[in-house]
Image 1 (cartoon, rainbow, N blue to C red):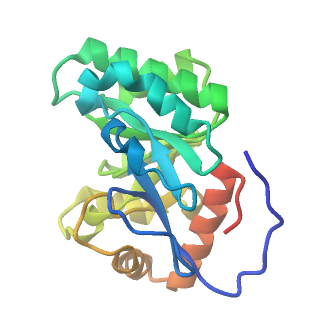
Image 2 (image 1 turned 30 degrees about the vertical axis):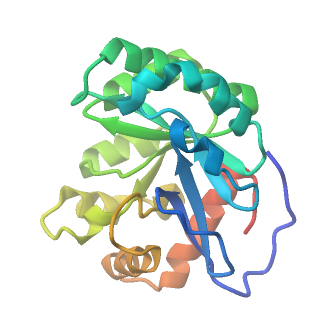
Image 3 (image 1 turned 180 degrees about the horizontal axis):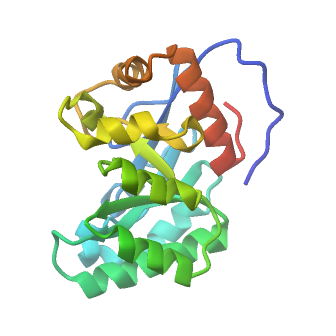
Length: 228
C-alpha cells in the first residue's frame, strides 16, 4: 500500500469508510465510495473507492475481470463490498464470489469490506481457510456486544452507521463496548450525513468528536497505509 509521512492534524477530517453516495472527498470529509460492478465507469481517480461485486449481484460474476482492472488502482483502498447474505438466494455462487474477492484482495494487498447477514461464522471460517491476513472491515455492523468482542479479538474492524440512532438497538451497546482502535463510521445509503454519525458516536461514548475522528484516521492508516 502507498505510504505517506504522518502529518500533524491541524484540521479534523471525517472519514466515511463506506458510502454509496456520490460525494467527493474534500478538506473536511474523506469518502470511500463503494463501486458496484455496474458503476465502474463512474470511477474517478481523484477520490477514494472500494470496488467489488455485492453478494446480491452474483449474476454479475462474469464482470470480475473489470472489477480487477479497477482494484489495481492505488485510489481503490479496499476490495468489496463482498461477503455472504443468508437472506438472499444462490448461496453457492455467493460463496464462490466471496472466495474470488479474497484472492483479489491478496493479489493486490488490499483490505476487505464485508457485507454480512447472518453469516458471521461462515465468513470467518472462509477468511481463516484462505489464510487471509490483511485487514477486514465488517461494514454496517449491527450485532451484539458478544459478537463484536469475538470479531475484534481476531483483529477485525467494525463499521457503524445509522443503527447508532436506534435507541433500542443492541448495536449501541456493541459500539459502546468496542475499543476505538477497531472502529470505523459510515453513511452507506442512509439519510444521515457522516458529520451527524460522528456526532452521535461521540455523544454515545461521552467523548469529543475529535477523539473519534483521530481514532478513525489512525485506523484508516492501519488498513490502507495512508495518512489523511
